[in-house]
Each structure stands twice: as C-alpha cells, then as structure tokens.
Image (cartoon, rainbow, N blue to C red):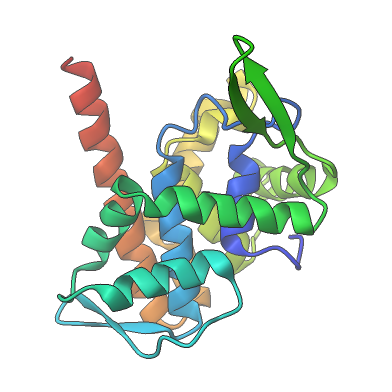
Length: 230
C-alpha cells in the first residue's frame, strides 16, 4: 500500500485509466465508491457518529483535506439529520461529487501521481484528462489486490476496504485477466460476506463500512435496472 495516499485517493487512482487519463469504462458506479470512501475516512477520524441510524457530526473543524471538508460542510448545513445511505446518494446525485472528485484529483496531482492535460473536441469544447505521471502506485495497488484475491494472502485493512469498494461498484473485471475474473468475483464476494475487514476496524467504522457497501450495492442494482428498462 502506498502509505501517503488516502483510501479515496487510492480508489480514484484505480478508477482512472493510467494512459488515457479518464475514468475506466467499467467504473459506472465509481462515484458511489468515492462517496463511500469519503464517509469511511470521516468515520475513521471520528468526525461523526451514527445515532438512531442518522449521521450526527461530532465537530465541523477543517481537516485540511479539501474533499473531506466539502462533505463535512455540506452535512453541517443540512437542517435535518439523515441516514448514511441518504448522504451517500445525495453526495453522488448533487453537484457535491464533482467538487469532491476535483479535490481528489488535485491532491493526486500535488503528490505528482497524476498530471493534467487539456484537450479540445470539435475545435470548441475543452475538457481535461489526468494521465499518470507515476504509474508505480497504481501498479503496486493492483499487485496487492491480486495477492489477496488470487494468491489468497492476508491483506491489510486498507486493501480489504478497497477490495470491498471494488466489489460493491462491480469493477472486478478491470483488474484481472479474463480467465481469472470468475475466481476474482467469487473471492471478492467471500471477503464482503465474511466481512474480513471488520476484524481490523473499530465498531463505528465497521458499521459505516457495512452501510457504505450495502448502499453502493443497492444503488448499483437500481441504476442498472433503470438503464435496462429504457
């Protein structure tokens, strides 16, 4: 695990094509994973607790992390306390997720992991791409994921949480050869079902992790059903 990267940065890095600098075509539900990673980090920092199934902020002091502070500020402005699943859905479906993604990309650029390239389409429309400047962190992450999934090695809590997010967002196919994908999906389901990561987390983060994975999985199913019915 690259120690100077956060959970959300590692997940974002996995979602981006290292050469093309855009989201992978398999990252349909990546936004839910990013929102989930943010909520997991905030829970790990003790920024909120769950009371009566609602998110209750413990404090609103800046963390120094722009992506995290954007979400804390948004929760603090709410007149009503909401369920964790409601907040994750809101972050994704509102303009908040775009700001969060940009903040994470800026952080990865500041750490010299990604670079920024401005592109133009039809000689008019400008857009940005974020190819890897340093591919080692992403390759290292994928290597550790392979060790846990294919070689069945014991992973640390960060790798196990990443694997759970990958499984919930249905991205297993992005990191394994075709002949290994069935085995990978089965192993990811085992990790999520047995909740192996729970053994390494405190009770609050364990509860948040379970809620995040359930929310992402449910949202992916609903989204896929809506798309197929069109």
